Length: 346
Image (cartoon, rainbow, N blue to C red; front, top):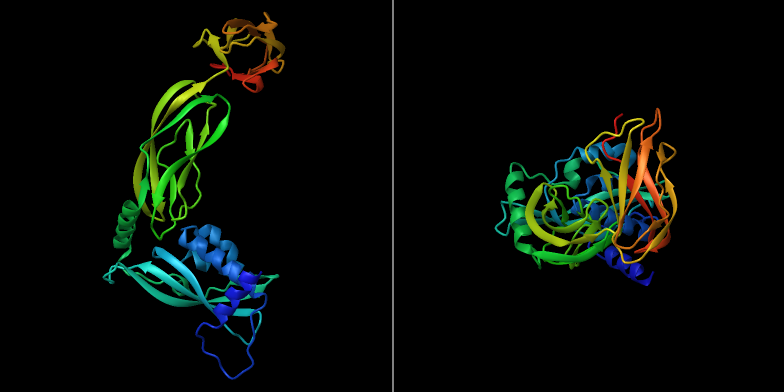
């Protein structure tokens, strides 16, 4: 609270034009400052749709109709006193890219109008240029400049990540060290779908020291060494990077269907083999096929490092989906394993 009060005092003592009429603070100035900072945080991160929650409902279309230039930084520098506590004038200092400036960037201050409505503060946008300064025909040049800045300021500090041995069915988060010294909040995403790894979409600023990978192992068995194509993005500006991810997925209980390519048809027997890849024996408590098949050869034990056979037959008018196997002893923390049937004839 003390820090927020000090910020409010500093903002109101910032230069402002004060008339002779009775002036007052806007209503709930701490909430106003918090809303203004969150709004501009979304805008500088390129998250225009997320920023809509801070705009008056009747002004949302106007907000989206603007054609913004990349904003490098936005800083709240002043709140002007007003005769109406339900209205506020907020001064924002903007750093934007510009080909006209020798440094490649310009700075100027704009004044936003905010309105108190429904027990909260909302941006009262009058015209998109009030919020997003025009850049003329410089958009393409600006994008190239942003790409150059990202390429210069963003670095993945290791080319390859060894995830070691992962257990099938488990999810994990892996931090990859990075260095980023730019002013623009950027994001990282996959350029192509990956069966094992995704990238968390948290905005990256100079305070971040890691890129976070989300790893899921449901659709893999055995070793992998995959190139992870990444897009490092700020709005329309994209820089590509490649990170190699390697490791191995260990499957405690594996399934295979026989015949592997034959269709599952009514009245015809087929087999599903279940292999225990661990050194621990487990008893079989329950085998479920949702009453869509007959289990003709139900085993009672899953021996260590061995394979057992389930003989199945499809019931009339049914279409199988999954097999559920429940064990009396957890293997690597799991006691229920599932298998989705292949080549089902619909």
